[in-house]
Image (cartoon, rainbow, N blue to C red; front, side, top):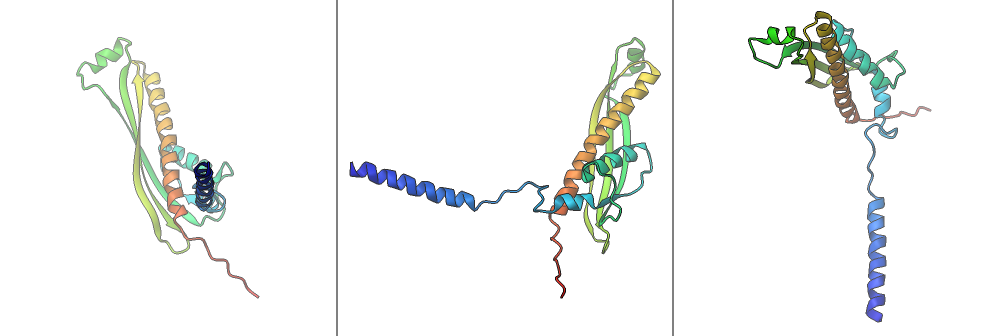
Length: 186
């Protein structure tokens, strides 16, 4: 009986020790209020677009970083962004035009590629730069307008996905930024 009682006490004490150990762990989400990443993301400004793909990526980035509140009036960080798109056929057939003219869709792919540079406005230091690309698959029919629309829809899908990747990389870079020190004046 006494050994059973002893084992219960050891189990109880080890349970308390484990709870105390786990209470010391601090896991926080990347965008938590305590880390300040959300505020930093809202203080990011983006360069003006040079083409339609730039515009789609930029608009989605503005929405994602500000939470739908729009662009920052006085950005503390600046992102220079350049994006381009290419559409190609997956098939390497010479009879590709014959296949599409018969009404059978031809598989294709649209690749949207972007390069970006995140800099701190106060001192011009580059915090992060990178190059990302996203591929979106399409079926292209023989009709001209349907082909253009399929490519544009694929570009839009890929551009929005690309913006999400870039926002995640910007958030990681801003989370590594040291917290600004508050100076108390008398």
